[in-house]
Image (cartoon, rainbow, N blue to C red):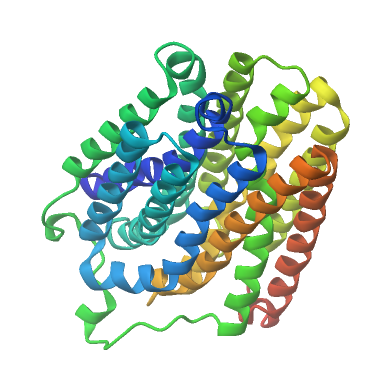
Length: 391
């Protein structure tokens, strides 16, 4: 395994998610200076993921054309620019929103470039584990964002959190190899005489998967994006809410690492497991919604573990089923992921602001259950499943 290529890819995934998670975790402090509301938070988080969804199909092709190293480099520079702009110029919601839109482009490229890095720099039997590590980087970003509340926002100010994150993004840029050759173990399809990779999975199933992951991510992302706001609304101190968010991030990290280790032992990812974890995540949201402070702890634990743990298995299924064009296939599925991440927080924020947090959580629960049903449909239509070869 070429760790000199994989390590920057993992770091890129973390810094690419920091703009949105930091904004969500520091919303109380940011709101005091800019007037940011729950609806406003939903809008600017949606800008982040909306831009990511818009460029996602092209991001996959761009990563394969310029190479994984250049893809990672462009992503980290965009993230650093956005974080730095918020730190220096984030005096209004408009500026923060524009910065998050730029960061969304970097996030989309980070996902496809890091997946391509894993496909090219990691031997196939270790793909599940490394994809699990890669997906654990998302809750790792949430962990860092939650930690920034008591350590930076409530001590030296929320702008310093973005400044430190911008520095981390620049450091990641410096760590990316300038030349891919020594770190690439698997040559791209074009190097093997092919004129262009084509996804193996039928297009209509990729679209169904995009819808499913969109509903799943759209339902679960608000758990992280609005966790601090919801906690404060039921009487939890802001500092404690930030620590609880960090603990939720650690739970997500553990779940995705375990999932990554397990799927390395499978010929293919089990779609039934993905659907089951989505249902468990829905249960976690119900407990958060109904249980007050105890429910926040128990339901949050379930939501951040089972609810967030399926993402790596999902990516593994798409990449494993499409070895000739992993980034292109993931680019289609990722469109749904980012659209869900864009629409979910927006709807959640509006409903929480104008109706109640209860109604918003019920909406997310329903979306997760529908997503689980679509995953089971894809399982039944999967070519290998029809042949009785794999789950």
